[in-house]
Length: 264
Ligand code: ADP
Image (cartoon, rainbow, N blue to C red; front, top):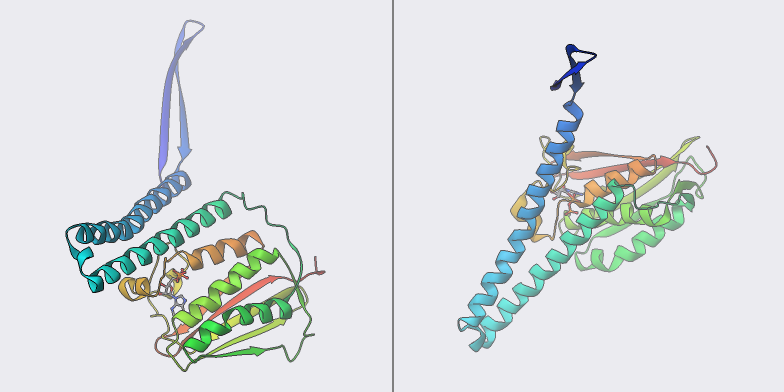
């Protein structure tokens, strides 16, 4: 542990003396280190797309703009990296708002089946472009109309993130299954894919900010490494949790649990 020792001398009533304060600063130091890591990671992540934009623009200025093919390719790169910068900034602001508690989550009754069907509908077009099958599995042993006690927007963000990842990391022709169910006081849903899976050594780190299993591969997929960190924080703010199970080359399952509406 890290102890800070403060000594202040004083002379009162003509008597010399000293006060010694011993403070345990372990948590403070850890928080400070996390903040420094975040700033270092964030600047690195922001600098990369900026560097690509800068060099593409310089190449265009140096003459590549004269050639229609090269011009199209470099402009396309500028547009892609600008989108990436926008995604990063959006995710970073989102995380900062959640962490500072400034998000103002308003939990209410949210029907899980409706939320899941809506989420699937939003993702069908993208799944179709990869010929992925999206399957909804209503609970066999609980009423199909179970409701969570959650902020609807935050819940949507959690679901979208998980289904989005499942689509990103599942090769063409795969299957994504969303199941849900309930116990007396919780509801849960899981997003299972038949995708690339996560190596055992990385599986517990995917919720860390900026963590990506394969930086080059995942970056090409448009990954910022912040999505799952946002998922985890949103769920914590709603008294829920998320767990992951994965087998490399076979697939991954994310399981979310939330308080059940009316059980409090
Ligand atoms: P992003 O939102 O940028 O994709 P995440 O925080 O959501 O970043 O994910 C972190 C990393 O976890 C990803 O870069 C990827 O390596 C891994 N990952 C997340 N979901 C899956 C999945 N369904 N299958 C395999 N790997 C995944």
